[in-house]
Length: 212
Image (cartoon, rainbow, N blue to C red; front, side, top):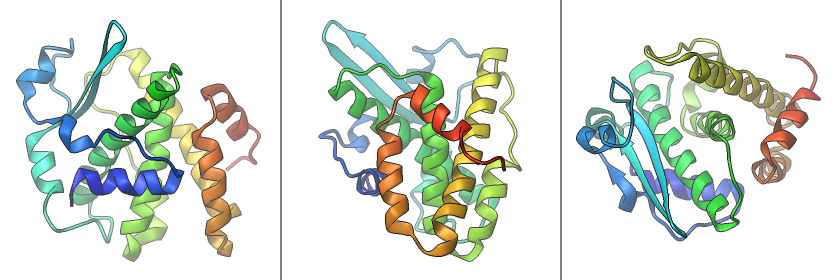
């Protein structure tokens, strides 16, 4: 599979297209990412964004081993941990890339929490599409059987935990309100509205959903 394939799938779900193609912004060089981050441990995935005057510089870093495994013909038709983990790292990078590109077009600021929340939703949607043999295990695998990476500071831990919690509730709601009763087209309409909302609007909407 290619990263451009994931980009096209997300663009189709949310009904928009950006001019930039993600393969043109990809690097697997850990030396490159280390020059622009202050973390001791090189991450498996990282989107780098910098502004120079009115121009933006954007790159996606993926660990070489993760990228090589992702590029193999296999996709996570069942919830094999390694395949699904590599797949999710790739989806996360593509999700961040797309969200930033689209919002830069509209000159709208985004937060890191907003990026992480949207990426969790995108991982859920694309895992459902590919993990057809284990669709019922996608939600617990993604939102219950997870752990934070080592080396995160307190602020980062809280952000990832909050994004996971809100995305879990939202995706559970998608399943209950649409997928279980065959209303996928209506779910797509909601997803497109959700994507275009601000962080405050998204969190408020999820807070108003029934408890899990």
